[in-house]
Length: 204
Image (cartoon, rainbow, N blue to C red; front, side):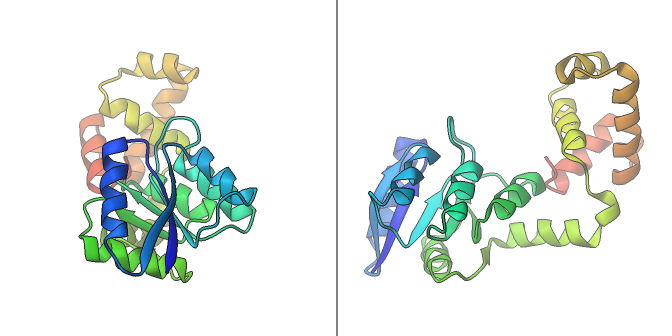
């Protein structure tokens, strides 16, 4: 029997996941929480689990930090289960030590197989995630820096250059320089096209 710790800040989602996991004969939920802080129970030995299934973006301790804590203390393997499929999110989770990365729209059978594989230490990536990583590897010259991704996200919300400068505490000239680099990497010549391409490639 594979013991599972579930982490998701939405009670209804977590309850649904628990029902799905417990419906399988070889899986059982032994602990759950609405924040990544619950992994401290694994670290101090209060709870014992074979795999951690965690959401990514949560208040307090998020999924990336929770994954890092578990990994640094040689805890059980972690499967990220989220709706976020940007390259930045994926890379952050994997660099923190996640073994698997699955999207929440996956079929129940896929979720079961991913949990089992992760518990066994086998890498499990959703097809969309594998594609995003492949694009990142095959287009290294197009990889955006964290600051460039941050600027793109602000652009997507409709921020002007001045608003970008104020939000990021940088000069207007620096914003313009970042935009030039972003346009070059994405092969575009304006902010609307940059946002469109970035979304298509799951960069934001």
